[in-house]
Image (cartoon, rainbow, N blue to C red; front, side, top):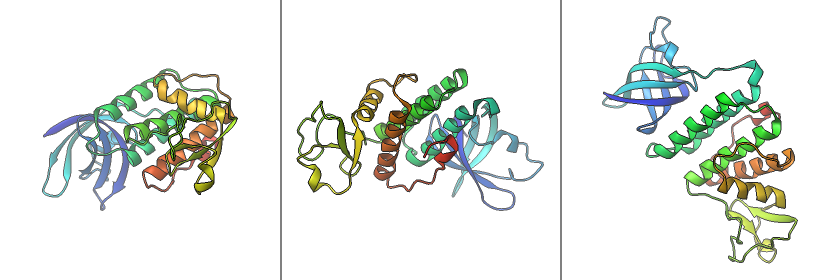
Length: 249
């Protein structure tokens, strides 16, 4: 039997009594496991399989599927009406973990999940701009861990260094970062971002453990949107996450 800690990312009914759970585990990365009988009212494991809980789980490899054999809650996902932003960010984090992590990725993502959730439980954000900044951090992390870091110092098309005095910059998610004025007319898919937005993204690349900042909310929001769009484009995924619940669009 295999044993590991893990976060429950999603659950999917399989038949009247069984379901599949997707877990990001410490030892095995993201895995799908069949949880037999857990849709029955009398199931003893069902109370230990709530979404976003950290659990200790045991499973065996069956002929077709991994089969859950044991589960116990280590750290429940404690929803609180007093910390709406905290709850929303954790849901967002788990959604992106499911979308942009894979079975062979383990240590780096697990450490990030554990560290961020521990921080959120201790010091939940109370300001919208802090929430936007943390969401931008989440997007940058998954771009980085998958090898999709945005290029901010040089033009992605010609390699020339960007003009540090430019107030507005051209950014292309397809090209992977900043586009210079000379190359811009040749690039169809691009958007204008403000210098401060680029500064935030650059700050994120150098300060992994910083969660507070003095950047304006609008700039943090723009950085989050820019990185989020690039992440979905690079991962060839279609956005299906309702970020409106955070009060952002």
